[in-house]
Image 1 (cartoon, each protein chain N blue to C red):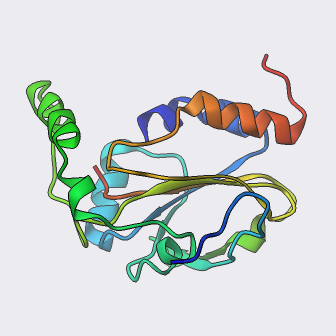
Image 2 (cartoon, each protein chain N blue to C red):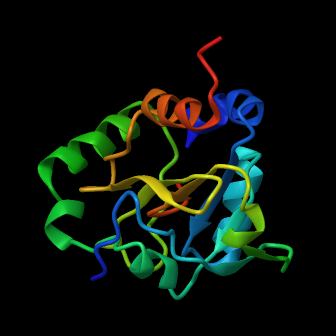
Length: 135
Length: 42
């Protein structure tokens, strides 16, 4: 999410609306918003209906893999604040680009909790949709 | 598990913000949308 926040101006320049969806309870959502100052609308989906509609999986093995454990260990060693997962700890996330006509142009279903497409890849697809070359 | 893929129409949804404001994907028809589904708020 931090990478997305750093690209806020570029999303705005491209006319892209970013929507962040979470299944966390409202209390944690408010805490997260206060701590991060995320500029994007945060939508709550406690039932995870959209996660299911977009085919985002839930996996015990992928969530607790050595790769993921190593990632979190590094964060802890860097002194970053960690919170317990709210809701289903095995629900995975994802990233989707929808074009102006409502058609899916990219769908990345996270294979594990740290699997996210690079922001540059997302921006490249979005620039292609909006006819913007990189400035 | 649905297997939607690029080229398919994005499933519409209506969710609410923390302020209780309903937001639908179709509200943004006419501009690209980046949907970020979080695993958790961390």
